[in-house]
Image (cartoon, rainbow, N blue to C red):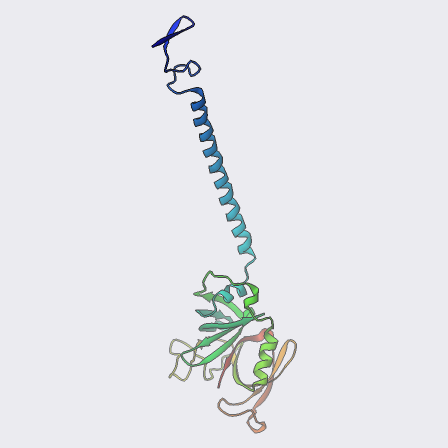
Length: 237
């Protein structure tokens, strides 16, 4: 059926306002609005993605090495220290300015000042809150070793090399070689003995041979070591 508009005949199923379009004006506007809604949603998604990326960058900028090490508790990492020293073990504990690695192969532990860490290998991206770390610092950890009267091997930064038991020099280091248990060194020095006292920024070490108790007759030297010279303190039970 036709209808007459302005002297022209039009099918009744076509829209006058649509200028010949088979859909009504309202339906065309609905499509227009839907397209606009899609554009707005896409823009919101882009803005959200940008915001998330920026927030991630900001949060990443606040992450410390201790946060990363806290997230690595129970996993094995390898630390590169000064003087070419390398130590590998399972992250067992950590606190303010120190990390404790455990070498299950030989049953020894390595206390490492984080200030001595040059590189970390095999460190995951997981991050733990600060509460995961002990609140006490390196001095308190060393005082605990002093109270325990533990025999320790202390690797220091500086010139010269002393290859004591537990220090590996070169690729042959390792259990049974006589020169390596858990870490290797290319420089610096190693002192073995018992920590007698710990100050605010230094400690006193009574040097004596490994395998003998700290007694006056066994002590070969009394050595004062500043904290900043410490690279590694290894248990020697």
